Image (cartoon, rainbow, N blue to C red; front, side, top):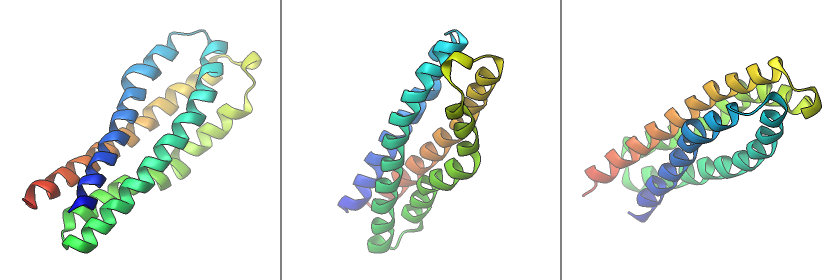
Length: 145
């Protein structure tokens, strides 16, 4: 079932991107001074949001199709886990994003640094949701052989 394999690939790409942000990009940016930290975070967030939002939507869609065609709850679980990134982002992360976007880099300081640190902790949940979805899709894939 090609839809399921595509769901797995897209979820793995989502998870890889989220993990890269958490393990490489975020720690590296935290080594910058406050002004550079905020100036780097803003465009990186915009680009990352577009990529990860698309991957979550596409992967979920493939997962839902695989669940519908294969009648397997693991595909459905993976689709919901990956899709859960949307409401989590809108409810839990977006308020922090809005506060950060409102701060001009010239006015960056301890508050903007603390918000970016908080953002990183919240973003880790996205990585966990992606990894869980990838695991569910992998489980469903292995069961379908």
